[in-house]
Amino acid sequence: MELRAFRIAYDGSDYYGFQRQPDVPTVEGALFDALRAHGVLESDARKPAGYAAAGRTDAGVSALAQTIALEAPDWLTPRAFNGELPADVRAWAAAAAPKGFHATHHATRREYTYHLYAPPANRREENEPARAAVDDDRFRAACDALSGTHDFHNLTPDDRNTERAPTLEATRDGDYLVVTVSAGGFARELVRRLVSLAESVGTGERSFDDLERALEPESLPGHEGIAPAPPEPLVLAGVDYPDLGFDVDEDAAASARAVFDAHRVERRTGSRVAGQLRDGLR
Image: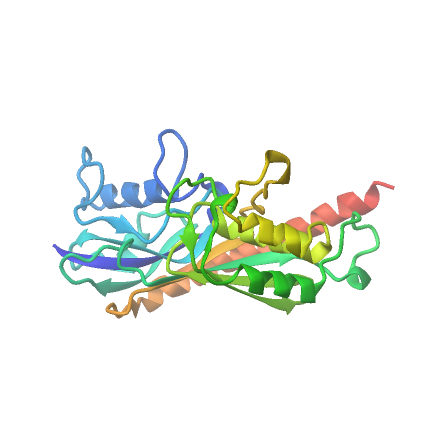
């Protein structure tokens, strides 16, 4: 047994978040069940020896580069790991980790991607419900204002460790603004509330003065609070460990691509069905 790190990709749609919880499906629960099935984790053990994960994604959030570390035998390759995992949770790369490695504390940078549906007003579908258009320039200016070191106590339910230094960047991709948010670490719900606040400034619902007030030491009154954006468009896209060199398991990666491509087709088909139902209700 040696300490090894695994890259894990998953579609979070059907999971109540990453962290194990009783009586509901979670990604960590699926990982532990697979390890028990492989005989790597004893049936009565709470977690594997040396175990830690890069982060705890919320319910509905997906990941490309979630990273876990644990003491594991050499034969537990990503491909072997996948043999006992559900199809929407895939190991795809692995690395030998040094003694004392901790997947949470030794991560130097985490990157999230948020796919914000924000079609320009002149590109909306005929029957699409009315919604305020996002001005790209205002949205990017809000991202710039939220980047850097701030105390984000008004943008997280956490009551400590709320000072963070994120970088927010937005790129237009058709009807979507693809928002990349990176930092050494994040408070709970911070990424989704950052996107929510930037969107509300982009639509004009909030002013830049409102944004600045959210970053001040005073707590916002309840009616001015910033709710988190929906979780489904959020992906944990990257976690950096300068001292680890991950080897991609090509068979495992190919399997994962096939699974997520099938999900992509399924959702496109679902979108067409929903469009027919919408268009038929006239």
